Length: 461
View 1 (cartoon, rainbow, N blue to C red):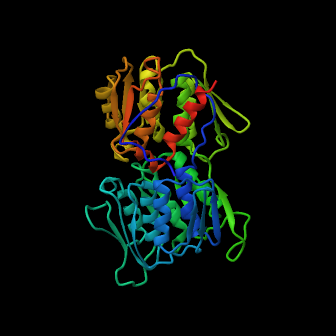
View 2: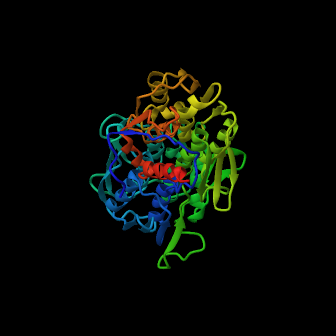
View 3: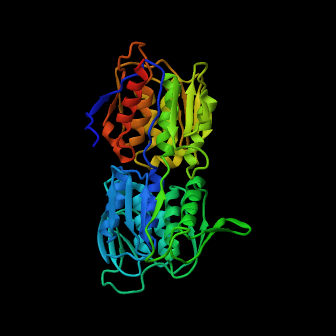
């Protein structure tokens, strides 16, 4: 178990160049997708290298509430799921999704696909503000019975019919979806589509974060259900009716199968940036090409800022041996979970840093655009220009004795912790504190422990 963190944590700067490796948790995006597909599989599946965090525990517990057998072993980093061949065992359940967007969208689509049953889903107050409209409209157009119990198109939801009559579920056919506010809505629809009574053809009304759609499509393929882009219509996905099973493994009644989860590329962004802040070299085992995760595109952005990045025998190696740290301009629309990492270290870069393609992040755990602008401008004295879709950060001298408000957002906590590793005073005195560092448990419970271990290892002669 990770030691309880204080309400306000002083970040200890690095007094020596970075040295060692960062052992990353499993990918949240892959773990929660694989949990859903494993539950729909026609055999028992064990996920290896899985993430154990608030978000994945919420997903696992919800599946248990739906009647699936899910056994977690945090020490071994495995999750064993007894697939039920596309059926939901429980015909009634109350599901709590907290602030987990993946769980909220994926479970909504799963429950909507059930021919029978009544399912009620809710989360924390902030979850009730997160976008759901595009997914709900698409599911309803396919025949799903969904009732909003509060504001329209938001959580809490009731899915199914109270009298338990048949005729629910998804009928299949054509469906339009606007997933511009969250690619998770399109991914949720895709994964539930094979449970419909006929093939589903999904037309995307607006662009989405394509790397996450490709991740979902590839996972589905590995679990035995390929999707295809329609000839001459790149915005149209065709998904056949079918059942999930791991490729190359026996179907129902066969032996258990295993599925490996990659280390989390978004979590890697913090440690990739660390050498730019403190100098030195760090290894990230298990990361590299090929990968299902689009967030690895953050590495080349840091290379333009001055980082050296190479593929080692066990994974990626990031190095900064001195020289100029340069501001960069980058569209983050495709990998926006990493933009906060760059924004947080922008005060250390020479010249302005411009980050675009981030309007949709205003509706995530918090308004990430305005929150980042406020912390940099009002708390750290930086010059920040904010528009609906972009931030431009021009460095100014950093002050000391400041406390960052995380806004309850795990990515604020981890991004600014990396900035705090900068040895501002030259003598290792902390100059930056993080309020509510424990919110990092949403996706990376051991983050601050891992960061401190690297700092101590770097200080050993």
